[in-house]
Length: 299
Image (cartoon, rainbow, N blue to C red):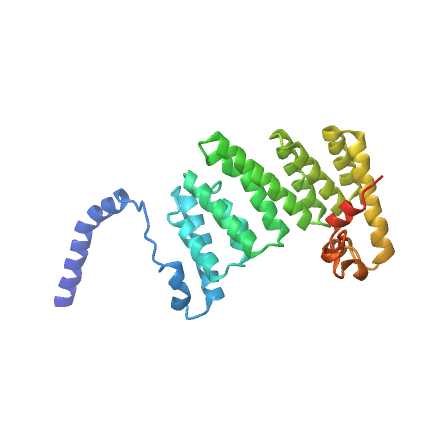
């Protein structure tokens, strides 16, 4: 009987208290969150040296938390600090850099100017850690040229960001030799430079893009753009320079791909390079394609 009485009393208390608690729960909403991790400089010690594993765990939390915040229409507090933690533990971890703009800016709730600046800082960190990643450069270029400036109040700074994006497009095009879809996207950088008054830079961009692509349709498009910027003669010279490069490539290194020969450079003459700075007059030592083009100009 004592047990039944205790059970009945417990049920009565629950029934009396439950409506008030339910009303409190419905009224109280979580509005912010704390950041539980130690400073980035101490994370390696906390992870006992398992840096990559800790970076994976934090990145998984970021993805889950971002999804929950979007469903709740809440801002993801401390997202940039979580990114700093991941990238300090594993600076070459690729996936976080590819999603940073989605997490911090255009895919976030109530993104701010500081979020845009954090996104640029993290993308630049990624390009430093992964200097040959063409896709990452394209991602950064798209953000700098199109997404990031929309969060800035100053028009001059917006223009500066777009120009930085155009130059990043140029680097993406150079790194993406052989990746036609990436190079097509990168051509947008030439238009940004041209609209900003950087005419010579736009022409240089297009000439380099022409030299590193095998896509015939893209080559025709680039030539049309060069004609529009500088006329038929400049387009012809760009075409002749590229043709002369291909003749030299096929003659000296026919077994090497275009990307590799651009990296290796032309075959250097050892007799020209030995003591070249001490000669009178100095003899140029041709070790890269830029010097090769300057020292063997078209007639």
